Length: 155
Image 1 (tube, rainbow, N blue to C red):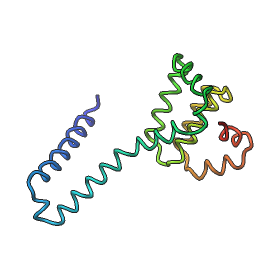
Image 2 (image 1 turned 60 degrees about the vertical axis):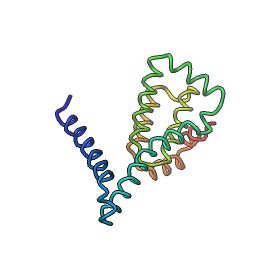
Image 3 (image 1 turned 90 degrees about the vertical axis):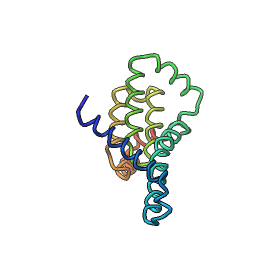
Image 4 (image 1 turned 45 degrees about the vertical axis):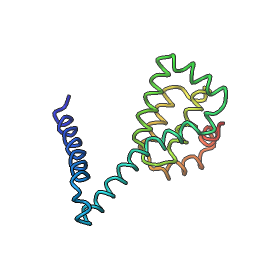
C-alpha cells in the first residue's frame, strides 16, 4: 500500500474529528461564521453521499435494462469471466463519471452487449469512452452515426 493512502485516511478521520468537536463545543452557535461553515460542510457531505446513488439509480432504471430478456442475460453473464469483467468495468465507470447523462448511455451500451450487438471487448471500449469523453461530444457522435444511434435506442 502506498504511504500516501494511510495519511489521506488519517486526514479524513481528522476532518471528521474536527467537525464533531466543533459540533460538540457549541462554538458554531457563538460565532456565526463557524455556524455557516458547518452548515455548508454538512450540505456538501450529503450531496457527495447522494451522487453515487443517483448514478446507480439512473443506470439500473434505464428502460433498456428493464426487459425480461436483459435481466436473464445479466444473470447468465454474471456467471462468466467475461461478464465479470464487464461488471467490473461498469462499477469503475459509474463511480467516476461526472455527467448524469452517462449512466443512461452506459445502460444502453450494456443492453447492446447483453443483446449480442457488441462484443465484450467493444463494450469495455465504449464504456471507457463514455467515461472519459465530454458529454456533448457523445451527443454529437450519436446523432451523426446511424449505427451508434440504433444501439443507443435499444430497449
